[in-house]
Length: 159
Image 1: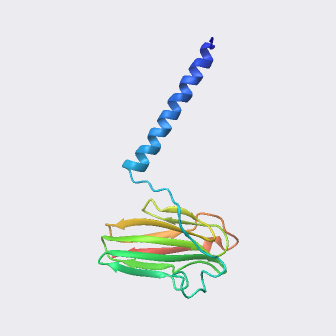
Image 2: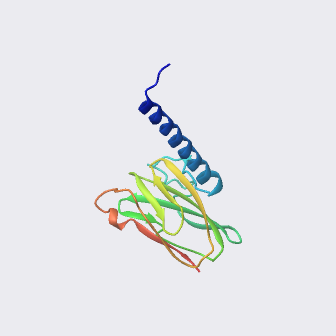
Image 3: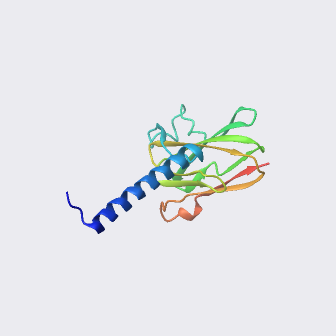
């Protein structure tokens, strides 16, 4: 079978690019700890804030063990805010974040970490980070969610 010289070069370049991309995804996923956000659970966005059995009805920080916490955070646009918008943990803590939305698509980016997920109504996103350095770690909404989007922020303080 005859293949034009330029076409052969493009086929070889395409194969090299695919190999490089596959290696980059494998290295970042298995060696660098980059996490791909997946829904942890499904919830009813219409009742998740009022259902007394839901942890999102009274969101906040819960201590599971020394230096191990879980944070339930609810995003909403009536008014535009994260609930709670202030968290505080000691240095060396590992925090697992569970975040959901009650209305529209939001984002959740925690500065200084690799946590940056889309928050969809009806889905719970779960991400974990360990905080070895004291300081303030602001979190913001990274998806335009409406006219009050600029009010979607909060802060995690590590002491």
